[in-house]
Length: 121
Image (cartoon, rainbow, N blue to C red; front, top):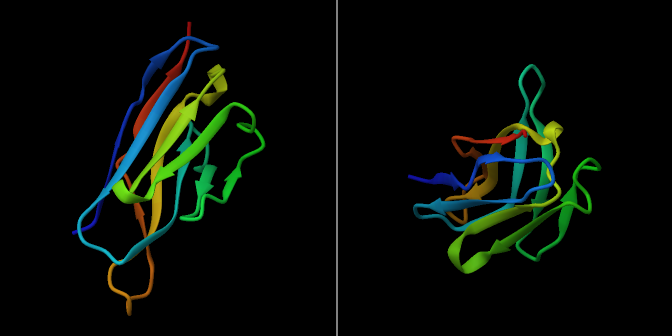
């Protein structure tokens, strides 16, 4: 059974940093891409950043130059380094991955359970 397990959320002051991690467990053929989404209270879930297995990245305009997504293919893990955090970054952050369990399977979308990030003084 494939699972995405996140860690690294918490409370941080404005201007601070946090690093999120998400590891994919289970047996599968490949994962591509991996990424992070977030959902603030009363708002829709939105894309934060994605990364392919070849390290091609995409960022939301609101986090460019502050957040960095990276990936360890050997560990099936994706990271999100968040710097210069703002109160508007407060949200539940979800790991996302498109996973092909077997080479002949259609890729499916998986989500982590979510980790809370609160930016407040």
